[in-house]
Length: 186
Image (cartoon, rainbow, N blue to C red; front, side):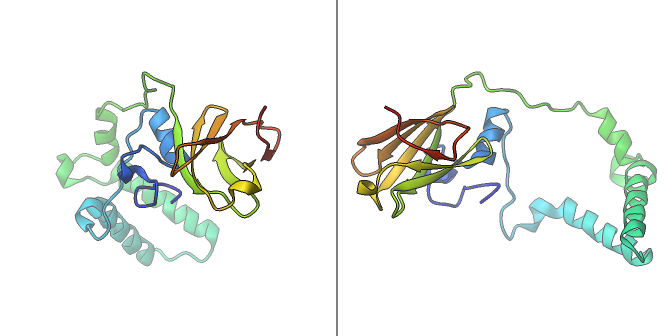
C-alpha cells in the first residue's frame, strides 16, 4: 500500500484516478509507475538472475563482520558493472552500455493543477486522517457524521469532504501545516 493502491478500495483500478501519496508524487513529476504482476517471474527475470549471481559470490567470499560484508558487496558491484564482460552486450561491460544510452528525466505535467481523491469513513470521533506533504493531519468533520462514507478531495492546501452516497459537501478546510488537528474553516 506504500507504493501502490492499485488493488485497494479507491485505488487506480477504479478509474477515478485515486492513488496514494507516492503515486501522486510520481504523477506530478511525470513518472509512469509500473508494477510487476504477482506470480509472473518473466517480468522479474533479470533481477532474479542478478540475485543468484550475488548469492553465489557471497557464498564464495564469506564475511566475518558487517564491515567485511560491505567491502565484499562494494567489490562485487565494481566488478559486476565495470570489469565483467557480458555476452548479451557484445562483450562490453554494463557500465559501458549504460553510458551509451540517453538518460530519461522526469518532466512535470502540463497541468500542475492535480487533485487527489481519497475514499474514507469518518471515525467514531467525527474525524478522518489524511497524509499530506509527508505530514499526518486529523481533520474534524463532526461527530454528527460518524461512520459516514466520504470522498475527500485535496488540492494544494484545500480539502473538501463530500458524502459518498449523496454528494453533499460536509466541510471545507484550508490545511494549516502548523497544526495536526484541522478544524473546519469559516
